[in-house]
Image (cartoon, rainbow, N blue to C red; front, side, top):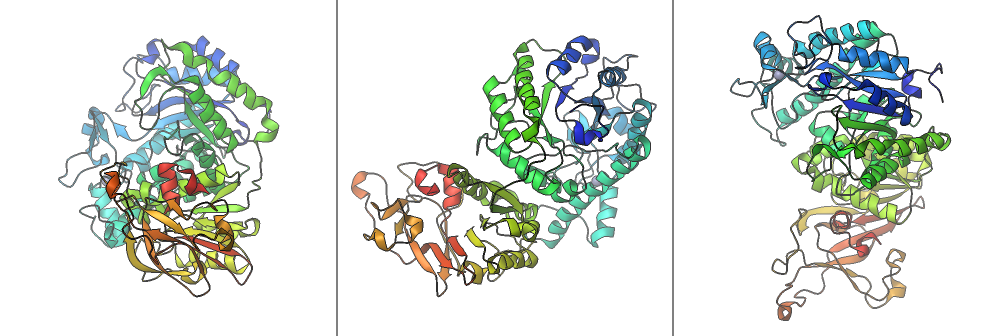
Length: 608
Ligand SMILES: [Zn+2]
């Protein structure tokens, strides 16, 4: 591959680098050092800070905040020139989320407001409102200025989606636009049962998609048809939802995704990066590129962040190669241009050299998986609500973790794409996918009618696409059970303890003491009639023609040992139900949330 190709930049820039410059860097940016790093790491593109919160070039707009140490220098312009001279693609990086006080004083109507009319602050900065002319007029004019003067190939934006859903903006723009769009006043608080709040959630997605299109219209008009504005998006779909980024609509209108997804979540660990790649490609298309910002500095979920200290090298490497497995491309990322911990400079080169050597197998791949695991942003938002990690993520992680360990290739499939993917799949997995529209349920039904098999768990289809509970799931006849509205155990996690025994429950395999008569799903458990459980179980009524292959044993004390005996050894409460379909498929329904408990507890018995 070379950069003289006539393919547009977003098809040919396979490896990326970013020196995320800070306000002091104009005084110490060592161009020679970074150009050498560009060459050593075999990159095709760089992301260079241009404007937004801080401007690194002399803008014609006097009210913007010029980097404190910029002086009369044009650092952005110098880096763009050097990169273009070295044959690199340049994305001008913006950060539209916040402004400094003098700018706020000049344009108070462009900033977001709380219910009392006070501006939302982030430290000393003011948070801008996505529905103000700052986003719809001022920033597009800045994009035009940059595109015309410096001719970057495209634009990114670190934080384009404004306030997240934990804060409601009551500025005049939001009041008017929400009223015009929905006929309602803005919601007074977060209330997932309120139709107005739900309408506000969807409206917020629409606003970001509108701005996406406004920015692209501006950059393409000023910079040519390939001058795309590509924002930045996360490979974590809970985070995408909290930030009102509609992955499906955004990725479907994109030629490339710049993924800001820098490090390993503790659960499920490194493999999440491969899964993020598959999820994003599922929406974007497999022929397109997804470079991903990979932190060279200490950055990890649930761990402290140290912006100028090096990450351990194996942490960088394993996160990157998991990304490669999911058809993600590398993009090294340093904060600041000057480092006294120089270990981070040597991490990228061997990885990116390996990536270059193996380009022939890393692009234009076609997935061969025949198992689809269903997800959707709507389910994450309207069913997951403020507890999406427990209600949505953990069941998904448990199912995919089990598939990964059993070496079954799978694909995440968006609930709107079931019909599209149906032909290549033999099994659909629905891990506690509570919110499904009638059309999505119909797609599942059609899949089963064509001979497909199903693994489903929890409250599948019990809620519509707004998260409103239905009397019964439209999939009751497909999965072979109807809900009875009761639940044993808790979905949420409590730390295991000898004194608290409410999660000390079990599953009883049926029939007992006669493994030869059991369902083949229980093969390998011949020596036991009991398995540990510890999770939540949704009580269901099995339909005629199904087989209950495990039942629930309620909790009993753990400590002291004298008390640790089963008070109720047997129940008729179904935990796992199986059936065969007329079309020759098989259906397994887990009333017991062993997908979630597996993600949480990692007990080997739960993955069998
Ligand atoms: Zn507003």
